[in-house]
Each structure stands twice: as C-alpha cells, then as structure tokens.
Length: 88
Image (cartoon, rainbow, N blue to C red; front, side):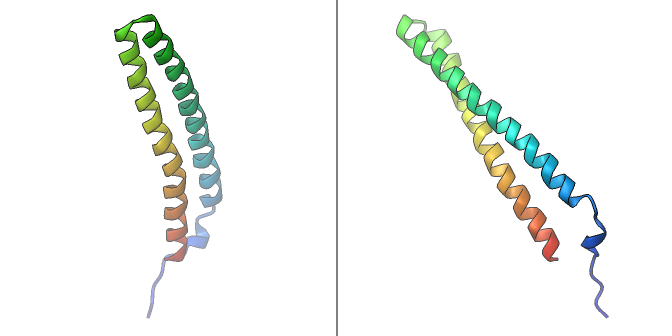
C-alpha cells in the first residue's frame, strides 16, 4: 500500500505563487532604484572630494546589489520548490 500526500487539496498554491512573485518583483524594483541612486551619490561625492559620503554610497551600492541578487534568485528558488513539491 502506497500512501502519498494529496497536493491537489492545497487550493492556495496558485495564489501563493502570485503573492510571493509580486512581492519579490517589488523588492527587485526598489533594489535597482537604490543601486542607481547610490551610484549617482557615489559619483557626486567622489568628484567633490567627500570620502565619507562616497564610502557610504559605495556600501549602499553593494547592499542594494546583494538585495537585487537575492530577490532575483528568490523567485527562481521559490518556483523550483513549488514545482518540486508538486512532483512528490
């Protein structure tokens, strides 16, 4: 006798894909905007000779880049996990 979980009874899996995908898309958009803003501030601070502001803007660029990578990878990882769960 084989007993398997019934994933067809989980009616909210489609809604979960939509909600998490939308949230990660919004995070990705804000991360890219922060990369652009921090890069502009970094360039202005470097050209005016303000090393403190340039260092903070450079850190902002790297943090926003990390957030963009995690958000972009999060969508792929979430889709892979949901597809894996459907195959069980």
